[in-house]
Length: 89
Image (cartoon, rainbow, N blue to C red; front, side, top):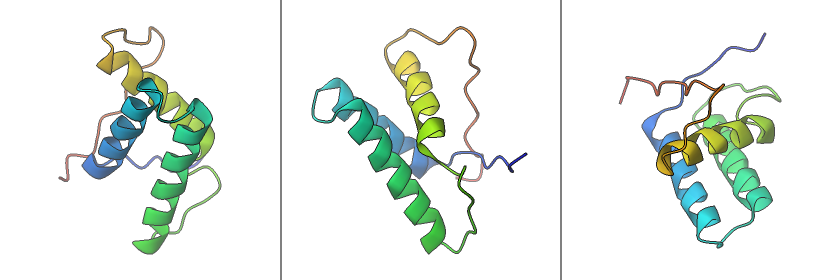
């Protein structure tokens, strides 16, 4: 099983920004997910992290986008518990 790395404040902000642009029809779902995945994976590599194929991949971003969308639109997902952001702000 892959190591779960908590989302930090900047990652969460990028996810929220992409969700809001999706909601405002500036991006398609596919574009928003791909953009966030690419940015977060590149950011991790540039910071010296070794990542695998699962780290912030499009499947995970899609799930997180649904969670964020539910929270922002006041319609929380029933079966999904949002992952806490890292407390190391």
